[in-house]
Picture 1 (cartoon, rainbow, N blue to C red):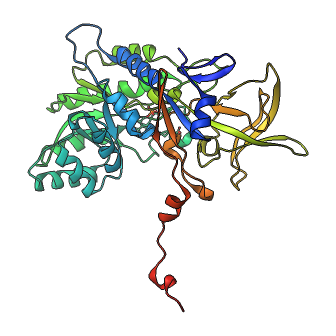
Picture 2 (cartoon, rainbow, N blue to C red):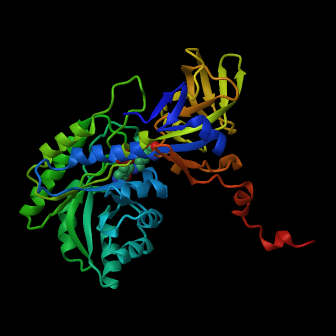
Length: 428
Ligand SMILES: Cc1ncc(COP(=O)(O)O)c(C=O)c1O
Ligand SMILES: N[C@@H](CCCC[NH3+])C(=O)O
C-alpha cells in the first residue's frame, strides 16, 4: 500500500496535497507518512514474531541512524519499538522520544568512556561490543560505577553481503565486530571481567541487502558459534541479528526479499537457538515512508544534455553522489503523459551534485514540483549545509493532518553557529 498517491492529478502524502504543503513550507522539504512508518513496523514485527502464542516476543530495536527525527522515533516508540543507537546523541534522542532504556541497544566500533558512562547510567538493555579492547574498557567503566553491563559480542562472520562496498560491514576487512573465530576467547576473557556479563552474540553484515543467502550464511555461523559457546560452558541467552534488509528503490525492478521471507529464513535457522532475539531494522522501516520534495529552478539545454536544475542539492540528499544511489523521480502534477530525458542536478558547485543522469521521466518545466522517492532513510539525517544552504525541513503527515517536525533554520541561525574571535572584532 503506497501512501504517496495521485489524487485529481496531484501527488499526495496520505490525504495531504504536496502542492499545498509546498506552498506552506517552501521547498525543498522532506515529507514522511505516519501510516507507512506504522505499517512497515507492523509488517516487520509480524514477520519476525513467533507464530505460537506464548513464544518470546523479539526486541525490535529501530536503527535510529536511519532517521533520528524525534517525531519518527516517537511514532515507533508508540508501537513498542526499541532502539539501536551508535552515539550518545542517538541515545538521548531515543530516550527523549519515549523509548525506555530497557529497550535500547548500543552498537558501534568507537564508543568512548564518556559514552559508555552515559549509557550505563541509563541501564540500557545491551552493549554490542565490537572489539576486545572495548570489552576491557566497558568492564572497567561499569565496575567503577558499581554496575555490570549486559554484553553481546558483535561478530564479523566474513560474509560478503553483496551490497555496495561502502555499506558492507561483514567482511574480514571491514572495521566491524570481532573475528568470529576469536569469539570463544572473548567470552572466556569476559568471564574474568567484573563489569560485564557476556550474554549474547550480535551480527550485522551490511545494509540494503537484496539477497537472503548471505544473511542465512551469517546467521548459520552465529548458530554454530552459540552451540560452541554453550559447549564451552557459556550461558547464551540473547542473539541480535542486526538490520540490513533492503527496500525497493526502483519502481520497475523486482522487489528485494519480503520481510515475510526474511522471517521464514530466520525462523528456520534460529529454531533451536533458545535465545531472546533482537533485530535492528532501519531502512526497512523509514526508507519508503519518506520523500524529498523539490522545485525545478530552471531547465538548461546543454550542448549534449538537458539539465533539470532543482532547488534541492547533494547537501540535502547525498545518496546519489555518495553511492550512485537511484531514487525514483515523480512530478507532483504530471503534464499528461509527456516524457523527457534529462540530468537532474542541484545548484551546488560540484559536478557530483547530480541526482540522476540521462533519466527518462515525466516532463518537468521551471517552477514544477517533483519528488525523490525512498528518501525516509539515510537522507535528512545525512544532510548538511554545504554551500551555506539551509538544512532541509521535515514534515510529517498523518491522514489529513500535517506538522513541521523540523523547521527550516534562518540564515541568522546559520551564521550564528560561528563565533568570530575577539581579536578580529577589535578596532585596529
Ligand atoms: C549495527 C547496525 N544495525 C542496524 C543497522 C541498520 O541497517 P538497515 O538500515 O540497513 O536496516 C546498521 C546500518 O547498516 C548497523 O550498522
Ligand atoms: N548511509 C547508507 C547506509 C548506512 C548504513 C549504516 N549502518 C545509505 O544511505 O545507504
